[in-house]
Image (cartoon, rainbow, N blue to C red):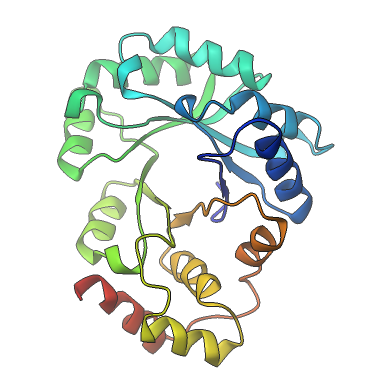
Length: 245
C-alpha cells in the first residue's frame, strides 16, 4: 500500500474523474473513495482509463455504517460502479451504530476469501473495537483509517496499532492542525518547502499512510513532492509535541 494517496471526499462528477486522472499522471498510486462519496464510478473510470497496469494502482472504498447487514450486495455494487475486478482495500467506514459489529467483519473476511477484495480494514475504530474484531474472528484489520495530523499525534495510539499489525492511515491531515504552528513553519523554512509538505513528510516518517484530498493539480503535485527532504529527529519531536498542546 503506497504511503501517499489521494482522498476524494467531496469530489464528484467530472471534477472527481479529472482529479483522479491527473493524480495518476502525477504519480499517485493510491486512490481513496467510499460508497458515501458518490464517486466510485468516476474513480473507477479514471483508473481504467489511465493506461496504467491495474496492479500499479491501489484502490480503497468503504461500506457506510447504515449498510451493515448488506455487505455482499454493497461490495458487488462497488465493483460494478468502479468497473474493477477486485478492490485493493475495503473498509468499514464507521463503526455501525457505534458498535464494532463482528458480524459485519465476518462478511468482510468472506469477501476477501472470495477474492472480491485483496485486503480489509476499518475506519474510525477505537483500539478496543479492533480488539473485539480480533477476539471474535482471529483476523486483524489491515488498516484503520482515522482523522490524523500533528495536532492529533498520539504515540500510544501509534504503538497500539503497530503491536496489532494494523496500519494507521490518516485523513484530513491539514484540517486538524494549525499550519502556521511554529514547528511546522520552522521546518518548512529549513527545507525550503511548504508547511503542508512538512505535514505530509511527518506522516511518512511515522509510517502513517496519508491521503490529502484535493482537486487542484498544483496542490496535488506539491503534496506528493515530499521525497526530496527529510525532517530531523528534533523537527519530528517538535511537531509531535503539537499533539500535547
